[in-house]
Amino acid sequence: MNDVPHPQALRWAADAQAIEILDQTRLPEHEVYLRIDTPEQMVEAIRALRVRGAPAIGVAAALLLALAAAGHLHLRRAPLLARIDETAGLLATARPTAVNLAWAVERVRHLAHALPAEMSPLELVERLRAEADAILAEDRAMCRALGEHGLTLLPKDDPLTVLTHCNAGALATAGMGTALAPVYLAHAAGRRVRVFADETRPLLQGSRITAWELQRAGIEVTVLPDNAGASLLRSERIDAVLVGADRIAANGDVANKIGTYGLAVLARRHGVPFYVFAPTSTVDPGTPDGEAIPIEQRGAAEVIRGFGRLTAPEHVAVYAPPFDVTPAALVDAIVTDRGVHRPPYDFLRGAA
Ligand code: MRU
Image (cartoon, rainbow, N blue to C red; front, side, top):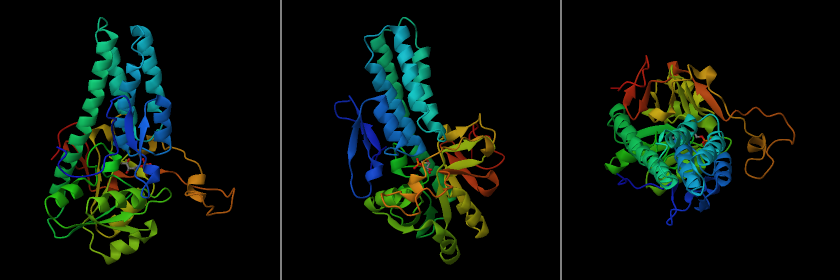
């Protein structure tokens, strides 16, 4: 399955007593894996965006919950379940917009409660570990499925030229990414692929992370400041805009990194198809539309002192939501592991 080379956002440590995450705050200058073995360390890593991207934070939190449960083997069932619930609560709320986080944590927590009462604590934690491993393996398979479905939408042109925003690549998942999965597959098949990567203000996930992972994979990548998107779409032939998602409402409205909405408006203006890629776990049937999606709050310092240097007067008012909502009407198709979905959306059914 892992035959398309790409960097890894996270993995079990060799001794299986910790999770190693690639500290994405240090890219592109330093490639450093951090060893994480407590819930508090994982919450810090998720909040600080050391591990980031909706699928990756879900997988990381699920692995950590299973690991933390194994640290309470001395407890009887009821206190063990209480500790699991407490840790799950901490992890699930570390970031609110990406629904995969709460989904993955709940999957492990729910299993702990559903297992037979006579099961020993040792057996129980082994089952939780297997469930977390299944979430990781499914995430990898999901990425490949997204890539294969995505390729059916894209022209067979040589080169294939796409524009992307933020990072929806390998470093946002446990596999080869969501929006970038068709890019990796096309490249692996020997096609020439050109990727334009929005810098993605304010934390530069596009230039620091997308450009880093694509360059490393030998895929042609060009970084542009976010405000060059309009001019690029007018002057270059772009086959499609490909983005990921942090939460997809039942009506097809899509929450993703700030700037995605503006890009969708620009793509429509220039007649370029706008495609969203996400696992089914990013679809939240409990959220009817974009209005109901909780948008995370982050500090003003990310905008005015993002990389250590003051770039606006101190104490100036800052407007900087980290995510925006793209209305379904601006999205040409949503690709999940079940296939290509078009309106009216029914994500739980198979798709074309
Ligand atoms: O704040 P981030 O870097 O976690 O934001 C990530 C994004 O917005 C991604 O596009 C989204 O999580 C999809 S990743 C496959």
